Length: 308
Ligand code: NAP
Image (cartoon, rainbow, N blue to C red; front, side, top):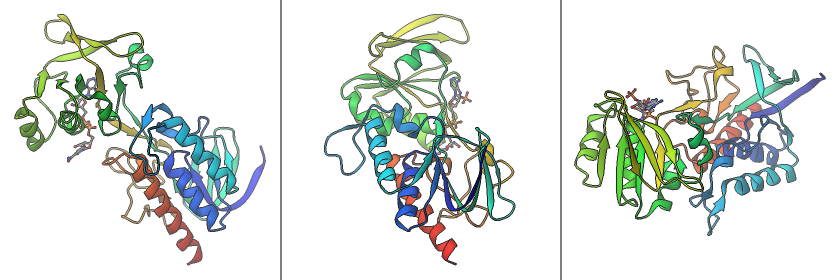
């Protein structure tokens, strides 16, 4: 595989953070190279309709939004390489990055925008019905469940926040949790327990999501008795945690306990010249528009770093 020349900016990731960083770097004449991974587009590629990205008066399918970003990046002359980064050396500049295909590249600055992945239950029915009533983001999809009964799986802060948020739309929200005690903060618990629209199915796990074309219910198993029961619902929100795609940066960048890249509020990581944007450094908001915003910040900071 050829050894590439040193680039001013290398962006890793092709979600809205990575594409936005590339757009800004290209417009600053930094001729960025973007390693987009084998499958381009990030998490929006598995999102049905996006209704909260400004500039789209009508809902836009996630893949179409990403396709538009890809075209914008191409028009600005960004070199996109459809390979994942498998190894990095940030110990000295220029930084060295190596891809799954064995390609090596050197970079004066790097924007890490590798995103995060929702943890899923791992059921075949869950995979089949994703985007058809099964979601991992209430903020993104809750609006589509007006007047419906929905299930939230999980007992952490996110599950309870999502359950509370979903009561703005759903007629009833049942939280399915594998224990009889929530992990969520007491404040969130108080909020959920006092909400008449929220019910709980304790000590239960989802055995299967029912439905062929769209989710129509869940089959639950009581982990204490083994008893099975079916609960009809129009939507299933899986909220059992997220995992940032940062394994490759372990030992190279400071990560928090959950693996998110630590940044300083200006997209700067623990290594000067390496910046991070989007869901790989944001466990809180996890929104495409926030990822785009932090991608912009990272590219502007990279530009300043290179100029300095
Ligand atoms: P989390 O705290 O790790 O909670 C995950 C929940 O999912 C737990 O209740 C866990 O059950 C359950 N779970 C995990 N795997 C499961 C499986 N295979 N089947 C069924 N249930 C499963 O994750 P999170 O709620 O996404 O929160 C992530 C982090 O962000 C946390 O540190 C959280 O405190 C923080 N956060 C804070 C706020 C806030 O401060 N307002 C808001 C959102 C998030 P167990 O309880 O039995 O382990």
